[in-house]
Length: 129
Image 1 (cartoon, rainbow, N blue to C red):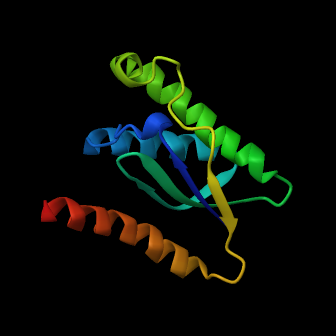
Image 2 (tube, one colour):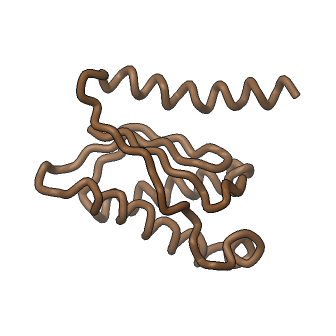
């Protein structure tokens, strides 16, 4: 199991619309299915993605990330030329960096709770304003 986090280029709040966030979830699920990657948990935040994934040991972690980030960006920006034009004129939806960790001594449940709490904490912060 791998815990992955990556952000949008320039930290644009691209997924402020719930429909866009849900669409990205669907795109990432499709890309994962096409690449034999299992998404255990996923949250799409305003400007970043949290995902807990697993895949066969024969697959290199870097190739899983490349597939998820690269293909999802291509599909999303192709479907939304208006977003590409206004925010991502260079054609890159995601920043080139990412955070990745193996679960190691952290249980899958702890990471799933952390990912769930991200959405909850963001909503609480939003409602406080």
